[in-house]
Length: 108
Length: 118
Image 1 (cartoon, rainbow over the protein chains, first blue to last red):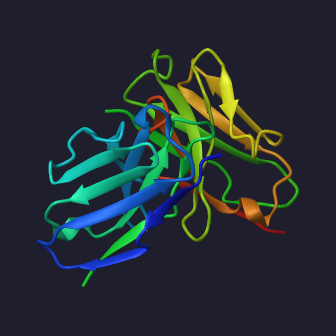
Image 2: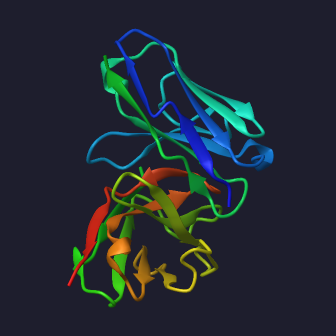
């Protein structure tokens, strides 16, 4: 199975700053079948990005995804107060579908 | 808008069977092109995909759980279910049901905490 490693583990930033979250796969992800989710305490994950770069329904354009092969990135252009949360990457190009361990974006 | 809601016991004794049901509202579970998944979140945040079912009954499971998992579907009542046999404390988790768009999940239930303890 593909192992996804997210970095950094924690990102301490201020509202208005930009954030760059990385995810590295242990082998190439087929056809860029890659997604990003946001999770807040007590809530289910929320889909942000699928197919590596497509924004899900109603996701603001400050969220963008990029990458291919083994390296993928989620960029948040300007952090809003509601963006402080844990972010997970996920691949669905090779079964079984797997998740990264998460990056926590916290208020500095 | 599609909504999903998990239900089932919050406490299961080892080595019994964990059983959860997901009720789908706001849309038909028989719609083609979508699969219906179970995903769990283990203590310490790790997310693990368990498996999915299609409306025609086709299933696919994570190999790590395949020997203990069964997912079923009832299109007449718009729900699908998870059975996980021979549970241990390692199966303690929040269990989510979700609509699978082909490997990723846009609609999720709120999650059901299941604790395995004697």
